[in-house]
Amino acid sequence: MHPDTDPKLAWPHAPLHRLGAHGIYFITAGTYLKEHHFRGPERLSVLHRGLLKLSSSFGWRLEAWAVFSNHYHFVAESPSTAENLPEMLGSLHEKTAKWVNKLDRRPGRKVWHNYRETVLTYERSYFARLNYTHQNAVKHGVVSKASDYPWSSAAWFERHTSKPLVESIYRFKTQQIQVPDDYEVAPDW
Image (spheres, rainbow, N blue to C red):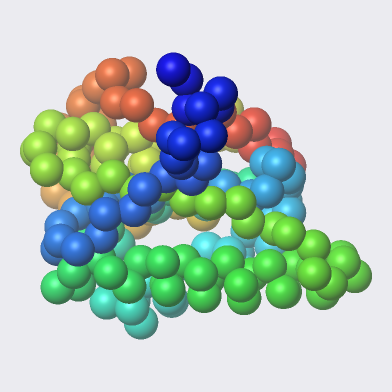
């Protein structure tokens, strides 16, 4: 019997978060109804700066990130466990939602929807998600060269990593990884 027709079966309407272990995580978060609340340079910069600042203050070491008008991705190493991830993202989402709602004069509007995390346990999966995240602005068609997008880690990665390693990471195929990324981003950044 299908869970929607059997009231005795619980059916999760949000992803289950298993955060007890230390590790490298791939995170995707999106806005409610995929609305473009962070369209434009000022809003993107605030969300970008908030992600970088809060991840550091919560002990997460970012390795790749990409921030857009209605979603973001990042790859990061957790502190001793990943149990503070909900608190970190909750803080980021609360602060940025209040800020953008104040700008739009829409107090109390729901801005963020949910997030998904994947612990990366295989080297190939890890490298593929690094590449996916660095190249996400290209995937979404907002730039033709990843390092030209100012709200991602691609330019930073290319400046601070050896050329052979950059080329190696950028060769990893991303077609087989399953990333829920059906967002259409705002082209006017």
